[in-house]
Image 1: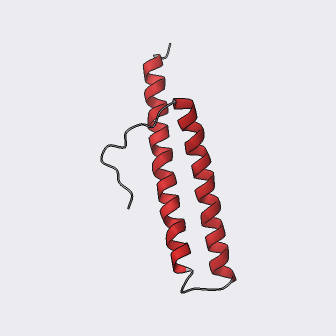
Image 2: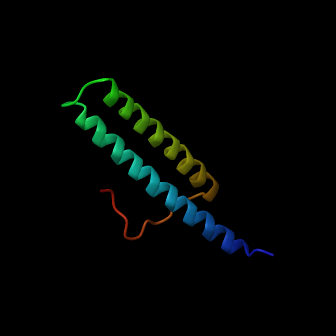
Length: 81
């Protein structure tokens, strides 16, 4: 039988991974939006929309795991790029 502590540890690891994935998607989207001041066109708009959708998907996944976990785990050694 699985140890409840192992299950909680696994959920924490998944939550941290989801948080980092969200941060990556957020910074990628922000870079595209900032670049949009110099770039125009349908292709760039599509890239921005795709990046925003990816960011929102990852935000929701992170939020759901965070709700399940019940607290924000420590991101030791991680920082926003």
